[in-house]
Length: 155
Image (cartoon, rainbow, N blue to C red; front, side, top):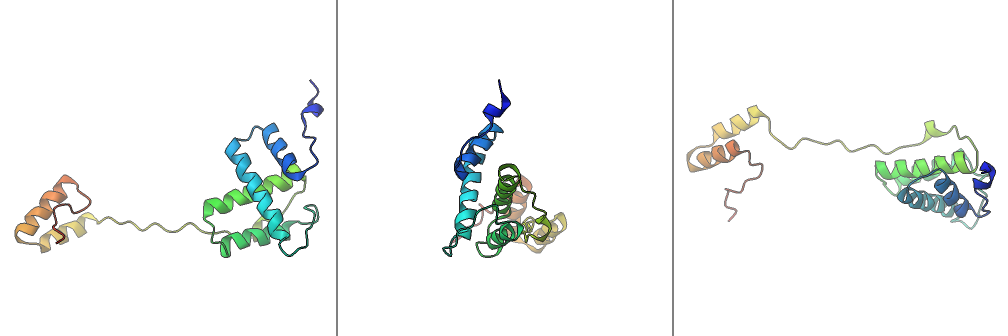
């Protein structure tokens, strides 16, 4: 079998992207996501009525697009990474253009997770400050490992 016969032959951009993704055995959901981001990228740059060919757009346009995602749309880190991967695929595998622009991209940061539990010393201090029936109930619930307070009446 001739390997040249397997290469994508489509003239339309999205069809060409789809064919290359399938030729490289990418997953269906990845294909759908990459097609979405390529379409969004092209339409976003053509929003002022001035459509440009992708070969004429390069690192500056891709950087602007990714910065817009991070700053204006407040996209999550995973969404931003997905869009970045789609653009890298578009330029590297479809257009065969190397973009050395990754250093200047403003990327969103993952939010810091603040632990919501108490340390052993904090639990001991809290239980030590209680007295009466409430202390007994709190010690029993603490000993069973209950995270929430089902024994406290919220009336």
